[in-house]
Length: 451
Image (cartoon, rainbow, N blue to C red):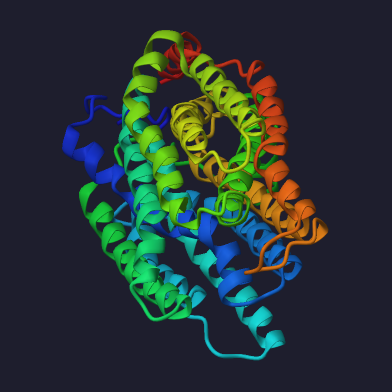
C-alpha cells in the first residue's frame, strides 16, 4: 500500500466471507437502533407512562446528543492507531457497554413520574453515546476495505441486507415476544436482554472477521476545527447529508406513527408486526434489484427513483378509507421497494466523498466524514421524535383509549403528508450531487498519479 494515496496493493475485490463478516455488523446496529426508532416512543408513552410531549423532548435531547457524539467519535477514530487498525478496536471494546446501556433503556424500573422522566433521559443518553462509539468506526470501515466504487456498492448491499434483517427481526418479533410475558413492562425488559446480548455477540464477530486494507497517509495532523473546514468544503458530502436528513426525518416519522396508526386509526394493533414486515421484508428483497440498477444507471438515479416511489405511496395512503387493512398493507409492500434505496444508496455514495476530499485537501478523513454523516441520521431522528411527540400532544392524543377524530386525523397526517413533503425536498437536493462512477474513477486515477 502507498501511504500517500491510501491505495491498497491488494486486489480491490472482496470475498463473500469478507462481505458477510462486515455486513453482519449492521445486524447488531439495527436490532438496537431500529427497536429504538420503531418502539421506544411507544414504550415511553404507553408502557413506561411518560407524557407524549415529555417523551418527544427526551428523544430530541438524546438524539441531538448522539448527533454531537458522532463527529467527535470520528475525530477520535481518525487519530487511533493500534495493531488491529484504527476502527476495528472500537467494535471489540464497545460491544459490552452498548449491550448494557440498551438493556437499561428498556429496564422500566418502578419510579415516580418525575424520576421516570429523568431515568429515561439518562439511559437514552448513555445508549446514544455507546452507539456512537461502535457505529461510527464500523461505518468508516467501508472506505477502509476497498477503493473500488462498484465493490463498495456490493459491500453496502451485504451490509444493508443484514441491516434490514435486523430491522425485520425487530419489526416482526418484538410485539410477539413482549406478548409472551405477563405484561408489557416485563416483555420489554426481556427485549432489552435478548437484543442487547445479540448486539454484543455480533459486534465481536465482525471485529474478528474483517481487516483494514486501505489506510490514510501517515501525516494527518489537523485540529478538530480544521476537520470541520474539510467537511464544510466537501460539496458532494454536504448535498448528500442534507438530503439524508430530510428523507430520514420522513422515514423515522413514518416508523414511529405506524404503531399509533394501526392501534387507533385502523383498530388493528395485531397487524403492526405484519405492517413492519411488509415494509422491511420487501426492502430486503428489493436490495439486489437496486444494486443491479445502480450498476446500470448510477447510484444517484437509483436513489431518486426509489425515494420518489416511496413518497407517492405514502401520499396514496392518505386516500384509503379507514378500516381497509389489505390495501394499506399492499401499499406498504410497494413502499418497501422504494425505501430499499435509502438503505443502499447513501451508504454506497458516502465512501466516494472520502476520495473527493482527499483529492482536494491531500488528507483522507473517513472517520470525521462518517461521523458527520451519522450526525445526519441522529439529527433527523431527533427532529422526527420531537415532531411525533409534540404532534401527538398537539392533536390531543391520550394513550390507551379510543381517540377522538382530531387525534386520528393528526396521526394520519404525520404518517403520510408530512413524510411526503420531506422526501420530495430531499430528492430535489440529490439532483445536484456531482459524483458518478466515471467521476469517481477520475478522482482515484488522479490520486494514483500523485504517488
